[in-house]
Image (cartoon, rainbow, N blue to C red):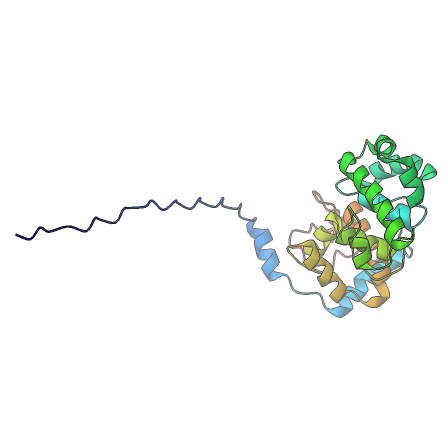
Length: 250
Ligand code: SF4
């Protein structure tokens, strides 16, 4: 009798269970609704809002202290995850002795660390400032490059740094999006976006050219002193009639 040989049953391989993704906290109903329901601003409304900002503060200034494009670049690199006031406190003494890439290199990383040790992440930042000074000297003839690609190639400098330097040092119509601009762009409905880049591009699209030189500062100052994160001061807000935020308090 022929022997029946059974095929061995396929071995069960256990399929590793996918880890359940953490469920993101649902946005508050009102906030969720607000994102969908926000009516885009019309061009006359945007013009009106920036005309009011301009009337209230014709020449807005940034709050980061600097004496030339190089010290502005260094101040912006130092300001990542730090307040402008904290950076200024450290850089006043630093820029008095090191306001050029060569002087910064002569100072050296160790002594630089001493000047900026009150600023968060100061060790990494000191390393970056020394490396960027060396690169500005070796590749850009000692001058801060005037192009986005040039600035973004420097250690510690990203898109936001390039936007601030191009705008403040070289008068270009760039829009640096920090935490304040990001919040104002979204809350008001002027340029909603999930990332700083989306908000940046949205703002550049809607803001008329005549306001672009100062738009970055108007929005930062608006976010820092009026449309503040926890408790926006809607009652004194210059654009409260135009703002689309459904939770505004006026
Ligand atoms: S009305 Fe309130 S939420 Fe809207 S921009 Fe002004 S401060 Fe911000």
